[in-house]
Length: 270
Image (cartoon, rainbow, N blue to C red; front, side, top):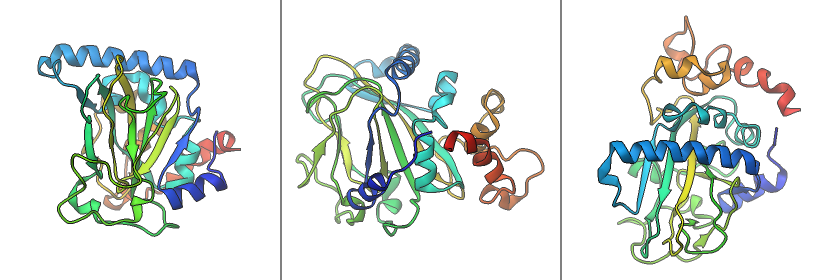
């Protein structure tokens, strides 16, 4: 299982993000892409109004297909996730991003999770409140191909009164050029967006948001039982399932959390 290196930690603290090259193998990325395409086709058939949109998002990804269950604690990323956020964590939301060719920016500059969290910044050495990991399932070899855009170091910068710039890039903005299987991790308050897409393909990616266990998740108040039934004990816990006989305070300190999340991963983390 991949672990957080000193260089990754330095980059996280100073620049505000980590780009994990080869987080997934090419075969794994292709398998997830095939699953995403099946979900996208079904979604477009059930929601014809999205067919003319240049970009759209499908939420509750793991409910859409069991093929994505293994991304919850994938060995290419889960060790890094644990090292960053700690063992008292949960999956807060999952999404598939679909980006078609467009001559205008596909997403404006923003931070995640609304106006309240936009103004909350933690100390560089503190575990984050939450962050998103985006798995790129298609190659993006050059700029202006629906690239994930970000402004390094803005995780320490207050959002300006009136919001982030519209119609122009903030100073220092960059576009990530990636290969399928790469993944980017970034906190809720890093300024980010999506570039125009002057290419001719469809860019697809999958994101998982992880947060501290005491925070409210985005996708569910409680995940459906039929979804939990197919998962491993660790995956169920990460999806918010506390099992039987838990008390009201167990949602932020379950008695067996380290056993379920860490001890089951000892050999993987070795």
